Length: 163
Image (cartoon, rainbow, N blue to C red; front, side):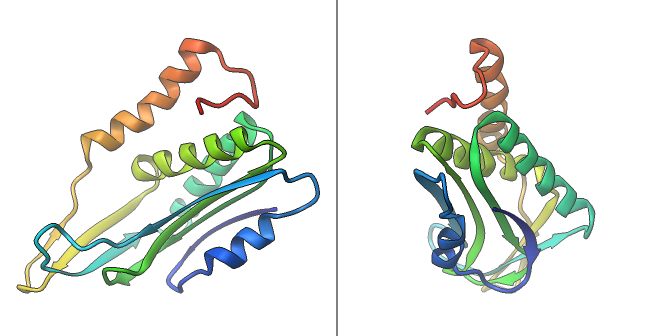
């Protein structure tokens, strides 16, 4: 089972996990990202914009890479766009496999890659009325780069993730 979507509507993580559970699945892993309140408060909403067509293709590429790197029975990537308030779901990444290691590694890979390779633009709307674009974080770039370094340094065969 594979599902990749960019959407405004919320998603049901439990229902998505139920769809991943198929013949041959021995383990599933997932990550649900939630819009968090900024330290000290003040965030009214996070507005996510994307370029339709380009964004979906980028997410499909990430799913292709995960499926090529690990032996998966399923892969799901859902990213929301539009105006989201603190506490609302923003992203869901999940993988299923015959073995937990592949599911765990693939899910970690997907979420790390989404942070830097998916073309989304985020603006924070503050309670003060101010709005500003969210800048890329160095830690996210380092997490993405670590996957390439791990694969290159150890020449991991398919089905053997870093976890």
